[in-house]
Amino acid sequence: MSDDQADEIYRGLVQILREEGLNWIIDEVETAIRTGRTDTIAVDVETRHDDPPARRRQHTKHLGHEQRDWTRQERLAILLDAVDAAVTKPLIMESDVLSVFPELDGREIVFAPGRFAEDLPMDVFHEGLERAIARDASDPTAPRYEPYTLRFDRRRRERLANADRLSSVLLSARRELDADLD
Amino acid sequence: MPISTNTFLLEIRAALGPISRDAQQSTRAWDLYEVLVLGAVVGGARRANGQVELLDTNGNPATRYLFRSSPGPLARPSQQFTHAEIRFAGQPALEAHTGIWVVGKSQLPHECDCAVVSKAEADAVRSAGRTPLWGQLLIHAEAKYYARPVPFGHGRAFLGLGLDLGWKGSTLVINRQSQNAMQLVRRRKAAAFKLTPGDTDDMYQLECRFQQRFARYRRTGSV
Image (cartoon, rainbow over all chains, first blue to last red; front, side):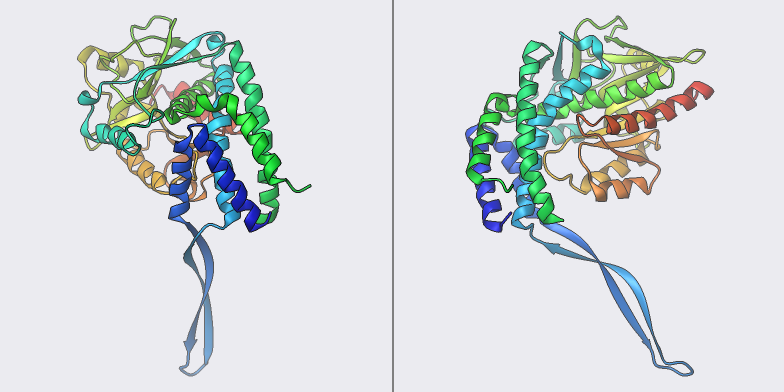
């Protein structure tokens, strides 16, 4: 895949995610991209011994590290993986949960705050607070510690079929990128 | 055959539309991942021939499955949260909880995404209204679900947590490969595992990790 095509797909996919209200995925990906990538390299260090009786050179291997920007193909790979982790994998995860807790089949599980924020120890409170203020408070998709329910019902199968479809589309692009990145 | 940009984006749009609503709350995946890790703990206990039952706070069989979306106390919980009771023949019972605080060696509370404590300690905690102590842990697992590459700092933070909790079955579980964080954790007295949803081999490896801890408990009765 060329640099231009990787860039074009990246921008197109970002546009689709924005339209679908999935800005948080873009935020996560852009944070990772801004950080850049650290590569480990092998460094050969030469030490010269000029003193007699033997004049010689000693070579030792050390580790070196270099910081660089992600390539356009790597950026697209990060975005594709993020969409997979954020959209398709949670639906697959529901099936995994059902296989270990079969008693949940046809039932619902509810998630609720462990405690009200004012009762939290300060370190835990701040962690929750940081998550909350990391996003725009006016964003309706921002995480909130409110109860919500997952239903393990018939509709889940339809959602799973859609997740499989999306997964195979993402995989087709990922395979082409992997061939280039290798 | 190389993919066409337009076709790819059209297919993405068509496939994403019907399920995008489910993904709009990022916290859903984090919360469900903690339940999945609890499932691996339960799976490990069953592999070690343990009997497992899901109970509510009062010790009655759960009829409503309620889990924490943010950390909270084991004693005097805000709701009737569900936990797993684990029994091995001839040994005192254990309890597995998600999202509870545990007091470390530093006397500070830590959030444990998944913790297995002796039932005797859990009963004492509920009775006294205190927080469980690190010494009564059999397992503590940190569940990290990330859409982006896992920050290296999580490996460092986990080592600090494991140290303060006395390396009691310390297990870091991440949804994707993170070479650096895993390399860092595995060089210490802790374990790091990848658990990608849908990957049965990942689940098997993690269950085997917990099975070892439970098998030792079944032999010795000691956390």
